[in-house]
Image 1 (tube, helix red, strand yellow):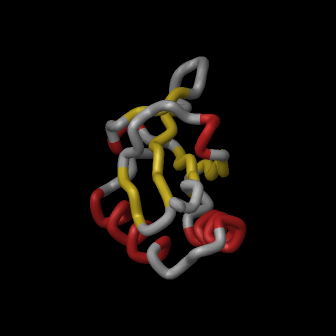
Image 2 (cartoon, rainbow, N blue to C red):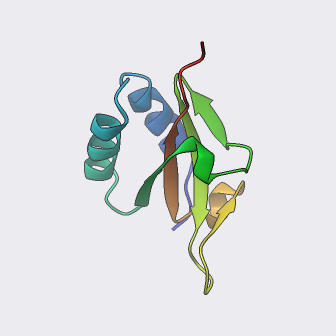
Amino acid sequence: MALGADEIADIEQELGSFDDVSQAHAALRKRYPHLAWIRCDPSDLTEIPFRSIGPFDLHLLDGADHCARITDDPARATGIVLVKRAAEL
């Protein structure tokens, strides 16, 4: 299922109301159950995020082929990887 622009905007808006990654992850999983949701540490990803919202980075997950991979194409996205960036000093 492709991730549409309206859905991306809704996710960004909702994500903007959270500071805690656990709460954000739980709320977004509940609201968008058709998407796979993964939470990662910033050190686990080297790819440039699809979007950055507040303290969070969103990476799009393409799980359509044999192996899951990060994509920048919403039409191929089957899920989202949610990352909370480390606080800047």
